[in-house]
Image 1 (cartoon, one colour):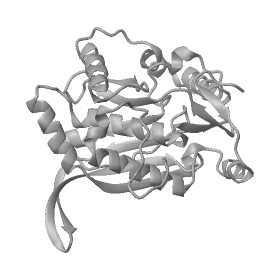
Image 2 (cartoon, helix red, strand yellow):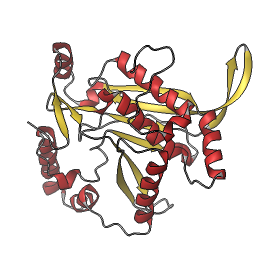
Image 3 (cartoon, helix red, strand yellow):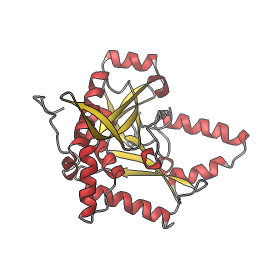
Length: 287
């Protein structure tokens, strides 16, 4: 069945059998937790702030992830009803609190990263959306609204209704209104728990929706690194990445992570278009 937000991808026999053996996304969970050198990024963001530009690490991480997806398009794929699809756009989702309080309401936000976006335009998109949210200029709609309604229903009604919605999602006929602002209908989910002074975590994925990966970014900390036999203090942040192994093999995924690292270590790349092709040092062709 065709889907409104993606195109069907033909795959080989090995990939199809892997999907048959692991039909659910959570059956194909692969997790990577590794530090990333963010020394250059910290200096870059500090310089931007001195110039009066209000950009944050989260803005940079989100765009770096989107640029990686544009360069490694298999990351934009997902499995539904034992078929493989590729999103027709690049969308990164995250959760934002309306207020900085323990009991404050949380809402799901989706940011579409257009091919011509760069750090400046993405920062504006994110800041405008969060500002409207916290100034309560945004009416709840889509999934954010549906959750309030569904969550208040009694078990005898809610459980079979949620089951029906999960089946509709599986076969690709879930109404667009229920996909709107839904965290799990994105290319990737990102959470910056480093802003809460926490290290990265393992965050499970879900069988619902069309998102194949979740990235949790930990606090930026001083770390000792050995360079040419000498110890050096650098800034680093742990990245906890959870992805669906059925969308691409390990070789492809590791190259994708190396590209993400390269973008973060060379933050000037964030000033270019999101879809700019990047060639890693030591490679003969674009990845």
